[in-house]
Image (cartoon, rainbow, N blue to C red; front, top):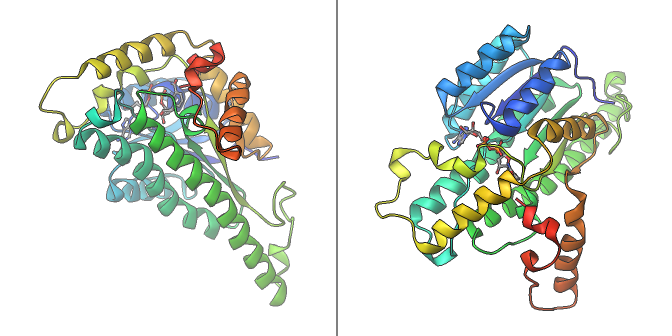
Amino acid sequence: MFEFTGKVAVITGAASGFGRAFAEKGAALGMKLVLADVNPEALAQTVDALRAGGAEAIGVPTDVASATQVEALAQAALTAFGKVHLLFNNAGVGSGGFLWESSVNDWAWVFGVNVMGVAHGVRVFTPIMLAQNEPAHIVNTASVAGLLSPPAMGIYNASKHAVVSLTETLYHDLQLAQAAQVAQAAEVGQPGRRAGADGLAGAPGALVSCSLLCPAFVPTGIANAERARPATLRNDSGPTRSQIAAGKQLQRAVQSGKLSAADVADITFEAIAARRFYIITHPGIMATVELRHEDIEHLRNPTDPMSLKPEVKNAG
Ligand SMILES: NC(=O)c1ccc[n+]([C@@H]2O[C@H](COP(=O)([O-])OP(=O)(O)OC[C@H]3O[C@@H](n4cnc5c(N)ncnc54)[C@H](O)[C@@H]3O)[C@@H](O)[C@H]2O)c1
């Protein structure tokens, strides 16, 4: 089991939705918190609320799309608490509408946050975790949109598919690197770094591991993600019809979500404790995921995921 009490968690996108719920759950478990968000006012309010509840927390205003700001976040975490045991690469945004109507700015913004934000987190924090030589874990927030390709949300789908693939690869890379580390330590007779020393599941001695979170729609601020778009990446012209329709559909879908952000946080922490890789909060979507895989295996043209089961209408 992964122990949470007294350990340090870094959470991006911590001022709203899932990020804030992860912070509240971490605080309830006695973790020390390093909260990052691009919205400094909402971040300060979140940190104040957690501290008022007795949590040890700092806020570090951070744009995860910036390599140097994520590096500064790691430095701030180490300065405040000395270590990092749990990282939530969670900040994310979306824009909808037909793919060919999406602007260069739409691509740059969504990929900057959803893909490069996660890439920066992995690049900066993984070496810190590996060097600590104690249990640590990374959770990357993708989406059901990383497992399916619903229409009129192509940039978001592509960004979340990237997160799925990079996180699966991260899992394999961590297993490989740590198996090699253990073999090397055995050769030079280091007793402290033996296989399975932590008693955790996975490859022998895999002290650092990761999980992939794929939720469907949950009521959070995600349908109003535009509030976090930097001025430099705003569009000159107004939204097209397909973009307006996609925005309305997203608002409806998010509001109709049955699970809360706190439910998602509970499920996620349970999975981390068990070191489970795939975290699927809405198992009703799995039949559609299976169908997509069958389409590929049988070389069938893609089935519209929205035309199938009602659950997929909630596949955010
Ligand atoms: N809510 C859903 O239905 C749903 C479903 C699947 C996946 N997700 C994913 O969950 C994650 C969290 O989203 P949420 O639903 O809690 O939305 P949210 O809008 O409530 O929270 C996202 C937070 O990220 C912050 N943020 C945005 N851009 C940032 C940046 N460049 N750097 C740092 N912080 C930034 C925002 O200020 C906000 O506080 C996202 O990756 C999202 O894609 C959400």
